[in-house]
Length: 391
Picture (spheres, rainbow, N blue to C red):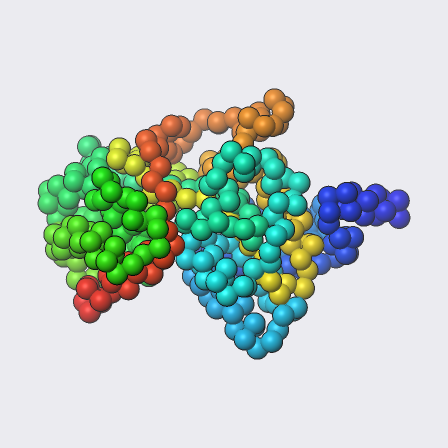
């Protein structure tokens, strides 16, 4: 046993990681907990890192990632710079921007992870850019997602293929479409998707920091669209669901006939669990799908930085990435450049037989990158000023 431990220490040193991580360590991974498949996958990760590295990984289930960001910020304000309650955090977008702005993340560690090279970052800028912001080695990519729509074939034979057809669908099926409040990640994603499509001939301002002039000019078509859409929505737009899970519940009850998700694999999973009708089908809009890479960060005040790096390195391993990509597990697309892997390892990523409700391979026509992070808060705040009094 002593020989095995010495060997593990030598391997860690070779990887640039401290031997401190060899000892038993408990880490708190603050991550969204609103999906059964995601939660089950993270439990599998916890089992793996416990067996491989003697690390206990606790999944702290979040409804809103900003809660964890606020906690780290409060610890910094209180002078807690080395015993943080948040070790790892699943972040991107405005939450990453906030943590970077307040220096709440461990710096310059991602490039030292052995498995990060497998993302081919020099030829794949999405691996080092988060909502238009350079990650600067403060967060590691671990999955990719895109907005998809889904419908019930029993009630809908030709779902809308673009934003204009979505408006026509709402007119033909009044009360049978909705979106969550923009305080929810899926709700604000719908606004960003519509904003990009409605400004498809001039998206450049959306990828630069927001200004009052840019915002007023670029958002005007969005408000005109929503002013027309809201009276046609579920409950005539007088009430909206607060979370993505509640939108799925409306689909399950056939109160709405069309919905959308940022996790394509959750649709067949929900059908299998009988949470959605058997004839539910998933598809992507022809004019493009809002898409992004999601990341894992390490808080600046974690007491266990080396152990946290080991966990992230495992998340980037072909084993963990292939497991996560399986439709029956999560269906989250890998961030690895599979072409860089050996032929034997590439077979781990082979597409299995798809569930009838699953998104077909190659169904994403075009990815619409997320706007600059500064647009998220601006959109949310303007939406509540314009419409929020109703809720």
